[in-house]
Structures are given as C-alpha cells and as structure tokens.
Image (cartoon, rainbow, N blue to C red; front, top):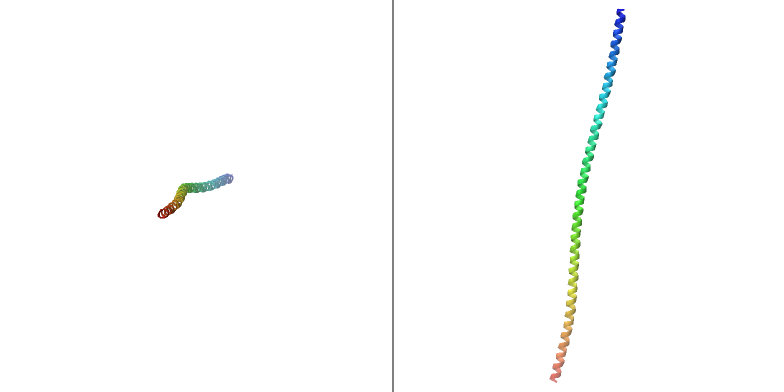
Length: 127
C-alpha cells in the first residue's frame, strides 16, 4: 500500500508536470503570437510612415509645380501684353510713316507744279 500511495503521488506529480509543461507551451505559443503581432504592427506603422512621407513629398512637389505653373502663366501674360503693345506701336508707326510718305509725295508734286508754273510764268514774262 505504501507503494500504491507512492505510485499515486508519482502519477499526480507526473500529471501536474504535464499540465505545467502544457501551460508553459501555451504560454510560449501566446508569447510567440504576441511577438508576431507586435512585429506586424511595427511593419504596419513603418509602412504607414513611409506612405505619409511619400504623400507629403508628393504634396510639396505638386505645390512647387503649381507655383511654377503660376509664374509661367504670369510671364506668358506679360509676354503677350508686351507683344500686343509692340504690335500696336508698330501699327501706329507704320500708319504715321504712310501718312508722312503720302504728304511728302503730295508736297513734292505740288512743289514741282508750282516750280514749273513759276518757270512758265517767268518765261512768259521774259518773252
């Protein structure tokens, strides 16, 4: 009977050891899963940070692009305005040149007529 008690106690001890080992294994599995979860969370957070950084860079580049486009548009407007002023001044110049040339030609024609008339009158007077 002492042997039976010893065997029962040994069996209880062995069962408790197996329960302990099973609980330790479950704990180890839990810890491993926790570590995997933490690693995945870290990867997720890192990817989110990279995404946010890239989005910020994209927004900055888009802002720079918009500023350059605005400057381009302003310069194009200035160029077009100056071109219009130049063309207008060229048209005025050409119009004034045409008027001047027309008046100069008519004046020379009138002077020639008057000169010829004077010569004619002088010739008649001399005769």
